[in-house]
Image (cartoon, rainbow, N blue to C red; front, side):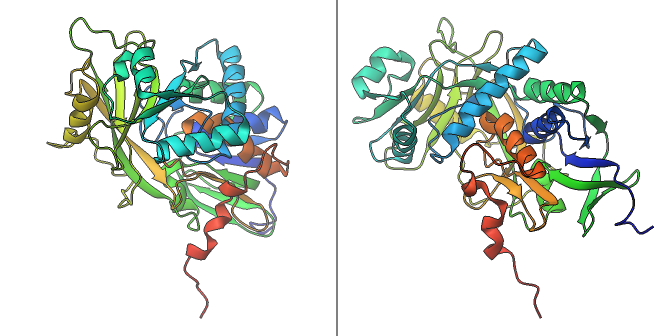
Length: 394
């Protein structure tokens, strides 16, 4: 019996059980699919792109109007995982987007709100300062867009909950196993592991910054990111009720592409603030990420916090690193990577995927079993970058 003819060990394998892969495993198992998940670490680990305690959740997504229905579906799936795990995974605090009229922050958010009839409220600078005094330092002419559906998601806990829900539905999980190669053929896919091969009919590759190592046609650039947290000044309140989710321009830098994002402190935690990153990026090796902090590396975010939030100590009180996976257009990769549909790619976080992760996992599961998605996801098709792959023709 040849390798392509031998019996399958499972119908589908999910490679990588992080943000998207954990939910893909859950959704496949919930559909009765014989599925096995393979993870090189343990679910909820701190070596990839889903570490750092929190991620922003938004429905009025400035990155693309097509993301709004995906975010709303994710919210439903977050709630299902909360019910099964007994943990709070998504806190809806509402959120404010602040910038100049015509800026990407404002126009991108408005475009999504208009297309989907979202309950986004426009505020002038005086109203922003009155309703959200933590954001009172503004540039003249700034406007705010209040998204009542925004909030904060908990990535590590969500991943663990999804993997446990998958196990409960019948999925097998193999941790501490590194995938060396993905080899599709006419009869199925061989997943090469150090411990031996795994033979399946189809595979979902959701390996985050490692995707390009396994699917060379996926134009994913791994990039190291430093996350930072800040303390309120003595006697100042910087809880999430006073400082809900935000994406905003930095005062004094109107007209320049300088944003910050974050949210106020959750109980027992600090205020999270990060700088926007649009690239281009030099690729980092996901297996050799520098986990240290270099002198001067947080100077920009320190100065931006000092210019924006008088209630915060501008020097970071805590930090950590993670590694993100960016695509050329900043949108995700979710769908079949080959004409036969044996290899499904699910990743390319580009710095804004976790809010969508449960629904992206469901979309990956649907692609693997040939189920039609409930919304248009053509803008996430991995094959949209085929023109970027160099030809091997002689």
